[in-house]
Image (cartoon, rainbow, N blue to C red; front, side, top):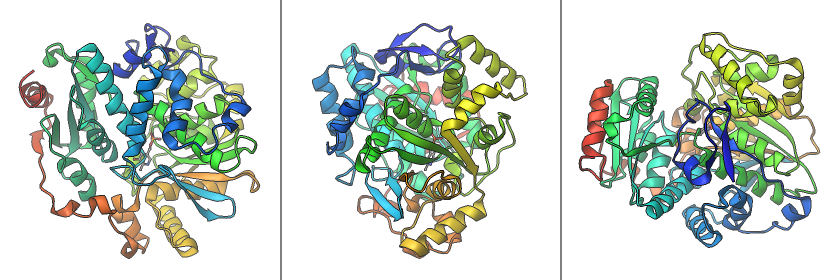
Length: 469
Ligand SMILES: *Cc1c(COP(=O)(O)O)cnc(C)c1O
């Protein structure tokens, strides 16, 4: 399989190289040159497969030519073997034909484990083969950092540096990062905010001199492998609910359009999906596009669902590329006008095309808490605030009661106690067994000033399993 850039100028890459790439050299994002398509019979024949075997069938075409089948199978079995539930992604019924797909049974209790557990293993496999080492420098507002560290902690060939804003992530989130030790694990608390952290990561990709020739790898959702891993659970859910003979709808809490873009790909690969609902918090750039064809940056608001607090939605470019007939020059033009400070609208027919599949809703903090309380009353289930936004959007935007509606349950509620307590159901919260001693564990973390040079010096001092690069 070959991968091409959404801006049409960067060279095409194979899977291995796309795994190790950040943004394409033209500023675009990589997407498969040709999406695989499965027949209904083929999909139907996968019913009842264990998760890792389904994952093999769905993802195999994407890695062909880079990873032999037997190796890929082994990697997948290991990856999904670490999840704490034997179904890996169980469905829980909330209401008539309404379900939550629980994606929080991985080591860090959020859906990001599905992709980052795999990414760490894929990186180590490919690097071992090449005899190379890489450095990861990533920024996190909470969930990505712990999932990336958990995914890479056993990697022989990866050193990982995760920047989080000092004193601005929740205690559970911080401890999930800082209580993991290893000579290749480096937590850095920056005396600044999340944007400061992200800017440092971007600047480090732009000028990699401080790495002395070691390659820098991206772990945010611009990395294609993350999107790829998320396609699988759409198939998994649909197969449990009568698919592919019956179509299914999904409601997806999203900020960067990563998770929902995976659903869009699942549909284009042959899975009958009736409706995809974009569920956002008050940071609603995606909702403003879907409801009014305006893609315009606005100020950032801190919400009770911090993992979706974004101003710009990085993966949206991948959808725009398809909406524009995969014309890279058109996307480069749109992104340019966006960068100039404006926003943009797309041609009416393209927007109408998108609206055939997508609906959207923006949900504020008060409505989020209301939904947590409502669902608790109806079912005894405690939702995390992101999932609650998905449920709210599902209930308001649903087109048909006859078609099963699946809400992606993106995190375990213990990660976000503020929202759950505000909703009045905090007493029902409990840490899962494997994290029950989280608050007693030792922590390790380096606090650094909001200064790019200081961070880069730290990375080059410690980037080779704690020793200088
Ligand atoms: C990362 C995250 C999201 C948003 O994911 P996208 O890639 O923006 O779709 C939603 N919920 C939780 C809990 C997350 O950690």
